[in-house]
Length: 215
Ligand SMILES: CC(C)(COP(=O)(O)OP(=O)(O)OC[C@H]1O[C@@H](n2cnc3c(N)ncnc32)[C@H](O)[C@@H]1OP(=O)(O)O)[C@@H](O)C(=O)NCCC(=O)NCCS
Image 1 (spheres, protein in one colour):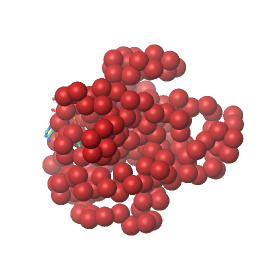
Image 2: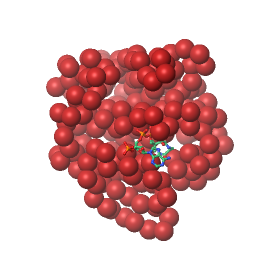
Image 3: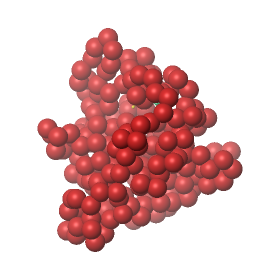
Image 4: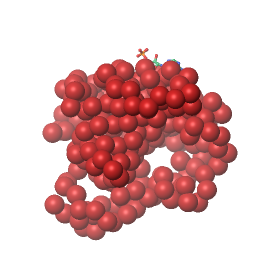
């Protein structure tokens, strides 16, 4: 066990953690559809600008689906919350374009429950131009492995009842349990102990050869 002070460049230096594959140094380029070069990596304080600008590349429907309400911009406090993470209880993976507009493209984050230490809430956002092309599935695979190495065994997802895309995305990786279901929102749980991690690793290895090293 080494402290974040020695090892980590996440914004917060608080928790002692084991050496992580999804560390602050996790950053890799990959070829996406239509010949696009993208980069995936841990969200760090320097991701702030891309995250802040990302809202401009989201439709009002996407914003509502992600934040369960409207949002024109992030406050300073929200930006700090979204980008200064401890990397253990709060961790996020971002995707950005390597060329052209160099936009922030997507973020998936997990936030550990205060009450149940083995559980985390997951939220995902993909800008509209990149939706429906399989990126959500890749990010879901990545966050599952990142959750597992953080000793998280159950993921929860909260979304609007009409959000078909996220429901399909969750059901692609496993069979969820229904938590709360009201007129306003649905909460589903995925038990990671029932997930086929070999399949996830093999999916990721096709895009990112370095996942052959993931234990
Ligand atoms: C939800 C979201 C993450 C899905 O990511 P994505 O990259 O668009 O999803 P994928 O292309 O990997 O597709 C996953 C599945 O959903 C389906 N899907 C994608 N978009 C869909 C849509 N608009 N309506 C219905 N199904 C859809 C796909 O067909 C696929 O299922 P299949 O493999 O059985 O065909 C993305 O659309 C998004 O960021 N939306 C806005 C924010 C949001 O809703 N966040 C979730 C709440 S936290």
